[in-house]
Length: 199
Image (cartoon, rainbow, N blue to C red; front, side, top):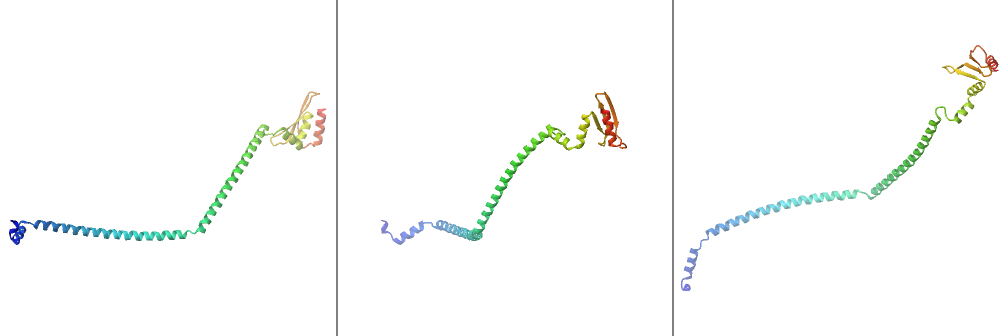
């Protein structure tokens, strides 16, 4: 029977049959691997903590800058800027309205000038009948020429604009006289001569 043998012999025999050297080597390798992993884990934790501290410092700095920026934006200045912008907007709108009104006025003036230009083109260089009549009434030279023409006397001007030649036609006698007016004779002389010739 198994229990009839000496327990010490049984233990010794059992220990002789077990080979634990390979198990010890494996356990040693596992311990080394655990130690290596632990060191790597600690290293990564330290790196993460360092990065976290750096981010925290950056966050604190940016938070402070943001707070300072917000505090520097005075509500009074903001309201003043809004009022200034509204004023500029009103000025621009008023200027645009004034320009529109001025544009309409200029368009009306342009239409009036176009109509006046058309009238002047129709009247020609000498002007209309009323202008001609007014000019003839106001100009004594034209009045004299009309009187002479009604008597049958055509007075011609030279290149300088001086009336120094007269053509006298007498329809009753059928005569035509050409008279060169010379300054050495008086106006009274030529008046008498013209009157005698047309009778």
